[in-house]
Image (cartoon, one colour):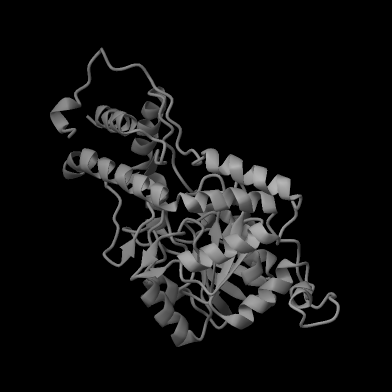
Length: 393
């Protein structure tokens, strides 16, 4: 395998490649599925394809209720709407996450309160979570980062202590586990993403998840424009009408067909991502020993889906330098989130100026994501490893 002595700089470096950060896994199955949906003649949502995919996800991940949605953002919005938040109500979530989680809280009528992350998994720091709880807190929204679980036992213990619901943002967590339980189905409700950048895709799309019957029934209504149409289709009412707040959150049959094809390749996708992760770990271990970078940490309680391979460099300046050098080699390495608490909107509208989250800021400044997707060949992974050794020599 690659070792340090093979990574010295030289004037005969190989010509730059073109390795993107991510590529959706597309094969003939997807084309066949889309043709099948088009031939069937029903393109709108909640048809036989959507139903079959919901059943498949439910069976694969031991979930009682799965509702496909137009995005993970919308699944999170549905969850927040079910909290019936009032002005001044707060929901605690990490600052190191995508803006969708915070927007869902705002659109649900509440206020996001940003907490710290841990320095190992980049997920919710339960010590800071406890500090953030106030009489106005109405829910906790942990985020599973890169397919690695937050410490859900600790989160749930605090939630039970304060009688708070837990909404899991598992956008990056489908097919990942916490102590043998699939992410998304551990709290009161959860959300998956099938965006183009995720492990399993439909282009755009998501899923609302819960193991609680009452939440599932209300989610059906919210997702169907606030009507009890699902009750009507089950023969529980003789006509359907507007009974609650809601919107149009139903995924189309075409996108469900794309996702159904992806789920047929779930083992292929998982196995290949795990292999690439392993090659990176072996090839970069010497740089970690020399304290040039820090490799990903997956705790014993977690089985990852290997959604992201992110290294941590000593400073933002060093990260940016290495990122530029990688790009000159044709490698799509990039940073990740700008912390939400330091964003212009949060500072101006949520009063977060001066909020001290030093671990979040440090991780955001030093994190560099490397390419990882099933079509990435072993030789291309080796090329990325060589480029890092050259940049950090």
